[in-house]
Length: 125
Image (cartoon, rainbow, N blue to C red):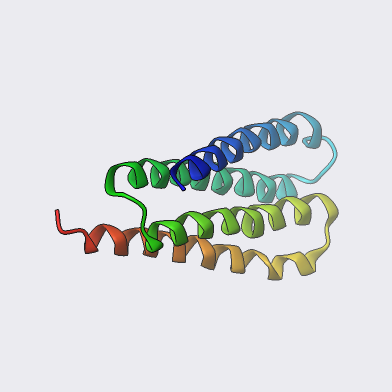
Protein backbone atom coordinates (compact mmCIF):
# COMPACT_ATOMS: atom_id res chain seq x y z
CA UNK A 1 0.00 0.00 0.00
CA UNK A 2 2.90 2.34 0.72
CA UNK A 3 4.11 2.25 -2.88
CA UNK A 4 0.57 2.64 -4.24
CA UNK A 5 -0.16 5.70 -2.12
CA UNK A 6 3.25 7.20 -2.88
CA UNK A 7 2.63 6.73 -6.61
CA UNK A 8 -0.94 8.09 -6.36
CA UNK A 9 0.29 11.06 -4.34
CA UNK A 10 3.04 11.86 -6.82
CA UNK A 11 0.74 11.49 -9.84
CA UNK A 12 -2.00 13.58 -8.24
CA UNK A 13 0.50 16.30 -7.25
CA UNK A 14 1.81 16.37 -10.82
CA UNK A 15 -1.74 16.61 -12.16
CA UNK A 16 -2.44 19.47 -9.75
CA UNK A 17 0.50 21.41 -11.18
CA UNK A 18 -0.60 20.69 -14.75
CA UNK A 19 -4.25 21.57 -14.07
CA UNK A 20 -3.18 24.74 -12.25
CA UNK A 21 -0.93 25.79 -15.12
CA UNK A 22 -3.73 25.12 -17.59
CA UNK A 23 -6.04 27.36 -15.58
CA UNK A 24 -3.49 30.12 -15.21
CA UNK A 25 -2.51 30.19 -18.88
CA UNK A 26 -5.49 28.95 -20.85
CA UNK A 27 -8.58 29.81 -18.82
CA UNK A 28 -7.75 33.31 -17.60
CA UNK A 29 -9.32 34.91 -20.67
CA UNK A 30 -12.03 32.27 -21.18
CA UNK A 31 -13.88 32.11 -17.85
CA UNK A 32 -14.93 34.80 -15.39
CA UNK A 33 -12.73 35.82 -12.48
CA UNK A 34 -15.27 34.23 -10.10
CA UNK A 35 -15.12 30.95 -12.00
CA UNK A 36 -11.32 31.14 -12.07
CA UNK A 37 -11.34 31.54 -8.28
CA UNK A 38 -13.48 28.38 -8.00
CA UNK A 39 -11.05 26.57 -10.29
CA UNK A 40 -8.07 27.75 -8.23
CA UNK A 41 -9.76 26.51 -5.04
CA UNK A 42 -9.97 23.09 -6.67
CA UNK A 43 -6.26 23.22 -7.55
CA UNK A 44 -5.31 24.28 -4.01
CA UNK A 45 -7.24 21.48 -2.30
CA UNK A 46 -6.02 19.02 -4.93
CA UNK A 47 -2.36 19.75 -4.12
CA UNK A 48 -2.79 19.87 -0.34
CA UNK A 49 -4.45 16.46 -0.33
CA UNK A 50 -1.95 14.96 -2.80
CA UNK A 51 0.75 15.94 -0.31
CA UNK A 52 -1.38 14.43 2.46
CA UNK A 53 -1.39 11.18 0.50
CA UNK A 54 2.41 11.27 0.33
CA UNK A 55 2.51 11.74 4.11
CA UNK A 56 0.24 8.72 4.56
CA UNK A 57 2.57 6.66 2.37
CA UNK A 58 5.55 7.66 4.51
CA UNK A 59 3.62 6.83 7.69
CA UNK A 60 2.73 3.38 6.36
CA UNK A 61 6.47 2.84 5.91
CA UNK A 62 7.18 3.92 9.48
CA UNK A 63 4.17 2.55 11.37
CA UNK A 64 3.18 -0.35 9.14
CA UNK A 65 0.01 -0.79 7.18
CA UNK A 66 -3.34 -0.46 8.93
CA UNK A 67 -6.99 -0.26 7.95
CA UNK A 68 -7.22 3.34 9.17
CA UNK A 69 -4.24 4.42 7.07
CA UNK A 70 -5.68 2.65 4.02
CA UNK A 71 -9.02 4.38 4.60
CA UNK A 72 -7.28 7.71 5.04
CA UNK A 73 -5.46 7.33 1.72
CA UNK A 74 -8.47 6.19 -0.28
CA UNK A 75 -10.65 8.91 1.23
CA UNK A 76 -8.17 11.62 0.24
CA UNK A 77 -8.10 10.24 -3.31
CA UNK A 78 -11.92 10.18 -3.41
CA UNK A 79 -11.99 13.71 -2.03
CA UNK A 80 -9.69 14.98 -4.76
CA UNK A 81 -11.85 13.41 -7.45
CA UNK A 82 -15.15 14.59 -5.98
CA UNK A 83 -14.21 17.97 -4.51
CA UNK A 84 -11.57 19.27 -6.90
CA UNK A 85 -12.98 17.45 -9.91
CA UNK A 86 -16.42 18.93 -9.41
CA UNK A 87 -14.97 22.43 -8.99
CA UNK A 88 -12.94 22.06 -12.20
CA UNK A 89 -15.94 20.96 -14.23
CA UNK A 90 -18.29 23.46 -12.54
CA UNK A 91 -15.99 26.42 -13.22
CA UNK A 92 -15.42 25.50 -16.87
CA UNK A 93 -18.89 24.25 -17.83
CA UNK A 94 -21.14 26.36 -15.60
CA UNK A 95 -23.22 23.28 -14.76
CA UNK A 96 -24.26 24.40 -11.30
CA UNK A 97 -25.77 21.05 -10.24
CA UNK A 98 -22.19 19.82 -9.90
CA UNK A 99 -21.94 22.02 -6.83
CA UNK A 100 -23.97 19.31 -5.06
CA UNK A 101 -21.06 16.87 -5.49
CA UNK A 102 -18.43 19.18 -3.99
CA UNK A 103 -19.53 18.72 -0.34
CA UNK A 104 -19.26 14.93 -0.73
CA UNK A 105 -15.61 15.44 -1.57
CA UNK A 106 -15.23 17.67 1.46
CA UNK A 107 -16.70 14.95 3.65
CA UNK A 108 -14.17 12.50 2.17
CA UNK A 109 -11.34 14.91 3.02
CA UNK A 110 -12.59 15.31 6.59
CA UNK A 111 -13.07 11.57 7.06
CA UNK A 112 -9.60 10.90 5.67
CA UNK A 113 -7.98 13.30 8.12
CA UNK A 114 -10.07 11.89 10.99
CA UNK A 115 -8.92 8.40 10.06
CA UNK A 116 -5.29 9.54 10.06
CA UNK A 117 -5.71 11.28 13.43
CA UNK A 118 -7.42 8.21 14.87
CA UNK A 119 -4.51 6.06 13.75
CA UNK A 120 -1.99 8.48 15.24
CA UNK A 121 -3.82 8.64 18.57
CA UNK A 122 -4.19 4.83 18.65
CA UNK A 123 -0.44 4.26 18.37
CA UNK A 124 1.22 2.95 21.50
CA UNK A 125 4.47 4.83 20.92
